[in-house]
Length: 265
Image (cartoon, rainbow, N blue to C red; front, top):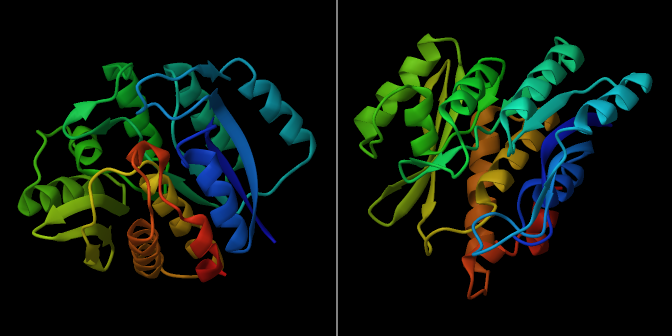
């Protein structure tokens, strides 16, 4: 089986990060090797949460991994708690990447035009540098604007321009998530073949974990040999189906994706 290292947080509630990545990538046929950045009582969008950063122990975990001589076919990164973790992750990619490793960076740092609480300009610069080490990045529209050093805009012409700017800077494959138009929500795929769109009907508003689910399905699909466009289309359809069948009062609880994991076999 192919091996995928997933560097992300572990949240007890919210169906996101590692609790999404582990079952999804596993059911798609690859081993998941989690490296937690933090353990959270619940994801950060709830009114309150408790978090234990694992910054100081991440290097110790990585040292133990080196003794096992793993060869990773995929490396997927997500939420971090501090600037030092970004340095650790950057070094991890340098040490474990081979010519056959697919690196996907989800540049978790912003939404709706604003940075997340606690994310400093220095952290954003390091996230941008991390993106330049990736084969694929999966920003939402706000994160795309920050990465391109441009103002936040939901206009499709601006989004295309920002993505093309990053491509010219060397980030060849970009998946921009959550573009909304009329009653549709789309994920925009930019690669060497141009731009492709995977769309579904817009149902409700924010749901926890959908970005993590999308990035995980992209990784699982690429490791199975699917193209980037095929993987994004599969993820878009999967998320739409799960949202339509989710019954929850608090969208922070996440979507009921578990019942559709069989579709990814």
